[in-house]
Length: 451
Image (tube, rainbow, N blue to C red; front, top):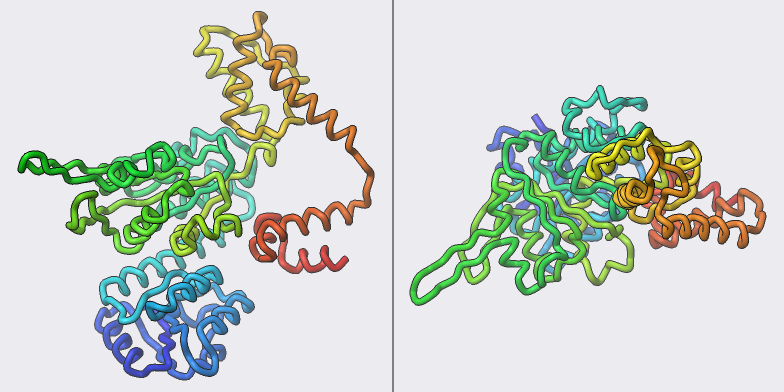
């Protein structure tokens, strides 16, 4: 039975919730009306979930969340808030709260959110217990990730994380630069899930006119001369399956509001209709942008973002895993030469060394274009540096010249400190986010910045 802590200074609220949750037979409840008692009750395995009021005397909900975060307590927290406190609830989610509910709480919505929170807790505990060294052979659905050619341990660990998340029905946010394979990863997740035999529908949020996109996504009802015509959208097309929505940052504010409703309750309505519809769809969204940055605060709903970021996966750029270049080049050369009806022995060693110095701003997608250009340029049976497209050689040689011309020796600790400082500035001083991106701890950041 799941252990749940109910924290609210109003006994009427906690009594109602306690009775309701006990009647489900799923929860063992502990009630606290004096928030000063909470800290002493919380420990690593004390509760499976916390249902937390925000507005309380003595110690408020934000204080409790900060305390839990400082102690590293990984317990899902569902926030209770009044309608006027939604902004506060969103800030709470930024501190790690799983979701929020507006008082008075709807019983069905409460159960759905609590079940999702429990699923999330189990999922992330499974991810945290993954061994340090992993292989593709350890994947239960190895074939689902066959599209990716990699020996990089970080990428293989990412596959294992994705496979664990695939086992749930929770929404997923994938972010990474253009050409890193976000849609391919979304397909792999779908093919690893219990929805694998159902539809996988992919769409680009920036591919439609903002005025027509709502009908494209949600569908629309039309009336012509008294005859009603129904046109389902891609959401209904993906029913029982998975919908992958790329470039989520392109959604208008009104679409973000409608998406939030679907994420929370699985409900939507078609254009020109007031009929509430439901669809059973696993949502996977993606962006090339880190939407947590302050530059997106006014353009992308924090509320929607934190619902999506509960399960987020970052695909690293190719320049961070250049050890994969040999196998990627070999695979792409085989594919592109087959398209061209040509046979090549391979690439010379100097090609791989040459490409190591390129940043690949469009990642694997750009590498494919480079190899395709080399196949078209080369008349012999082996790819050399001279086979590469002239534009790419100019870029690489320009980058190298720029690096050498502008190089000034500096002490290593100064270089590291400057890089950490720039990362902190990018994340508006939030050390936890900066530490995650840098692959170090908050303590490491404090030591570097103070050193």
